[in-house]
Each structure stands twice: as structure tokens, then as C-alpha cells.
Length: 262
Image 1 (cartoon, one colour):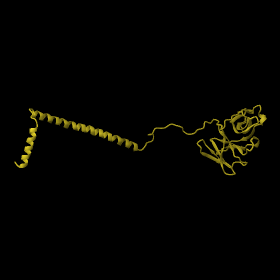
Image 2: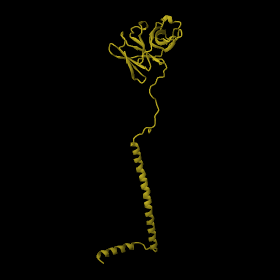
Image 3: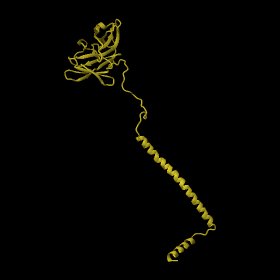
Image 4: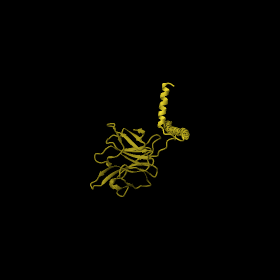
């Protein structure tokens, strides 16, 4: 026995003396072996559960990321409902708050209800209103008319002669690809002081808005009066010029130009 072995034996002997004696050392040894065996069996099971849970936690983000970056197929996204854009009801839509009743004569029918072009204040503080409208005669002829009544008056009513008979001119259906039924400049007798260059047009649908070009400065001006009929629209434009507009454009209810003319 060399010096190293002696030191080791001495150390072990000293440690053994510090441990209290046991009367069932073998039984204690067997208990510890059994406990160790159970711990070894338990650890693989716990490790498997932990590994499975970790696999799920890792797999879920991967699956979500894959779905988020996958190509979107038609019908994969839910449809949304909401306003589909502007539409027209086909009903008269006067721009002003004025209104007039029209009394038909000799079987006439109203194609476009009266729309107010301008107003003029009278001495008694009442207003004289100039109206534009379209009628159809018994024979099927269409007329674009101008008339004046006081506020609350009736066109062709009992006091119509006081303000003058309606002034009507024929309009006719345009050829295919055209939209202009007729136009006219409002006569001076219907205009107020200092007013000039007021024009009235009758256009086919789908006209919804009208822009006109003034000759003097090439400016574009909107028609500020409009009234809808079943198949035609009446526009009134204040050009402030003695010369007729040089050109015009028609817009549909999607605010798109669909026709330009002169």
C-alpha cells in the first residue's frame, strides 16, 4: 500500500465515524435503490410531456405564419356590404326649394316638372319666378316651355294672363348616339335686370350633370338648374354672355363624361 492509498483509507474511515450507526443498513440501501428506480421511470415521462407541449407551442406559430403568407384564394375573404355608389331614383330632383303646380291644357301631360330658373322680387315683396318645364301634347309632340308665376302661383292658373302666357318651343328626339333634344336662350322678358345669357337644354338620360364652355374666356361653367323626367333631363345654365356656349359635356351619375358636343 502506497502513501496515496493510505491517505484515502484514512479519509474514508474518518468520514464513516461521523455517520451515526444504522441497525437496518441493508433495508435502507434497498429503499434508496427503489426510489432511484422510480425517479428514473418518472423523468422520461415528464420529459416526453414537456417535449410534446413544446412541440405544440412551436407548431402553432409556424402554422399561423404559413396560413398568413399563403396565397389568398377567391372567396377566401368575407364579402362586405355597404353603399354601392351613387344611384338615381328616376324621380324629379329640383335643385331649388321652389315648386309650382302645372294645370294641363287640351290633354297635355307633364314630361318634366317645372324647375325654377330665377326669381325677381316684386314691389309687394313677393317673388316672381321664372319656370322651365317640358310637356307632351295629345299628338305626342314635346314642347320646352317657359312661364312666370308669383311664389305659390299655378302655371295655366286663373291669373296666368297677368304674367303672360307660357312660351313654348318644340323639341325632338335625337338620332342614335346623340342626346340633345333641344335648347334655347331665355328671352329678355323673363330675365331680371342685368341678367343675360341664360340657356335651357333638354338632354336624354343617362345625363346627370352638364358642364358648358363660355366663348369669351373658355371657362367651364356648370348647369346650375336640373330637373329629371323619365327619359330626359332639363338643364339651366347661367353663362353671363350674349353668345351661346361653344361646347358642353354630359356626365352620368358616376360623374363620368359620356358625351361632348357643341
